Image (cartoon, rainbow, N blue to C red; front, top):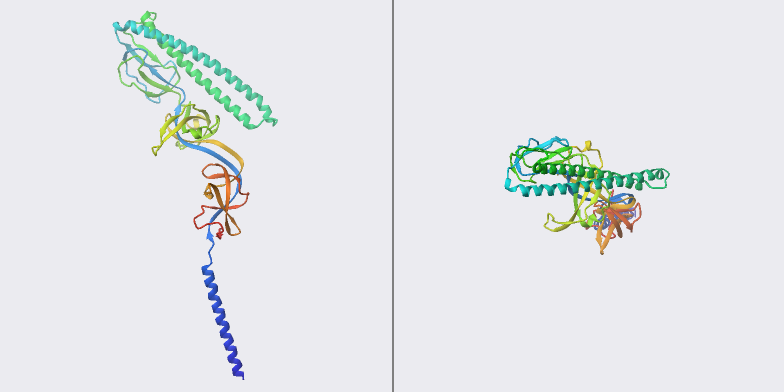
Amino acid sequence: MASKKRRAVVRWIKRGLIIVFLGAVAAMVVLAWMPKPVPVETTGVARGELTVTVSEDGRSRIKDRYVVSAPLSGKLARIELHPGDQVEQGQVIARIVPVDTPLMDVRTREQAEARVAAAKAGTKQSKAQIVRAKAALKYAEQEVEQIRPLVSQGVESKVTLERLLLDERTRRAELTSAEFASRVADHELRMAESVLGRFDGSQGDEPSEQLEVTSPITGRVLKVIQESEGVVPAGAPLVELGDPAALEVVVDVLTRDAVQIERGAPAAIERWGGEPLRANVRLVEPSAFTRLSSLGVEEQRVNAVLDIDQPYEEWSSLGDGYRVEAKITIWRADDVLELPSSALFRHDEGWAVFVAREGVASLVPVEIGRRNGLQAQIVDGLQEGERVILHPSDRVQDGTMVTWR
């Protein structure tokens, strides 16, 4: 009897072990065939500052440059100046011995008289420009003085003051350019009168005596155009002068970007060989031009002219015609709901993201606003704090189980 009971117990134990084994095998099969969570990288939707910029290559350019030319035909002595040399206003930079051409005296005299008349007109115009520039600067300074106490009291914003300060700096730069143009006009008048005086005999010069060509400005030699001694015709360019401290940056941008660039917009000058420089947009030129892209596609572009805001000592190694990269701000906001652009993808003629909720990816259509290439503004569809999947692969679909760190 006892042996029968023992055999029955053993039989039940064997059956139990078989059932447990089969259950384990079934569980392993089920687990093997169950979809595994897809590992993903996520980030949270947050609020922060968003800046949209236009990045293009540009070149530096001296604002006010002057090409000294031969006031009359003659034999030019070798010019001893070299690029980079400092010159003072009134310094002799070239000497010309007039060519003795009696048959051309009448015609040459008429040309000299015409140059004197044109130079006098240019002088009057430059003086009028100085008067206008001084009036504009005075008005800008008055506006700044009027707005300062209002900003201190909180009646006006700092943005308004910054805009007026920028306008004041612009007016001062315009006055500097007008004064430069006036000095150049005075120099041209003196040169023209000097040439005409040779025909009138008012200077007591013999035709064979040399004419000294002087510098109209204080600055540096940018280029010596006529280096060697030789005969030059009237009007031949000799030396190019300018002030390296008066530098601007010219950036050609697409016209669709140019319409978003405002006067005074902040900018940064990069990849020039030093630390990034602060700048602002002084002018967007009104006329566009056509340029071929690297892919051979015609593009309509327009020049944006930037002024550097930092002291000359911090960028004195930046010269005329240097290549730079400029980033111009076209839009900026401090409190924007944003996410990385790598989370976005096209969906039904719009945009969408995958939101990770309780281990499951959910497809959510979104409406986006401004983008800067790295971040995008979220107008509708998401809330702050939600986690979105970055760089979603084709393994991630609506309802896919996901896991992340």
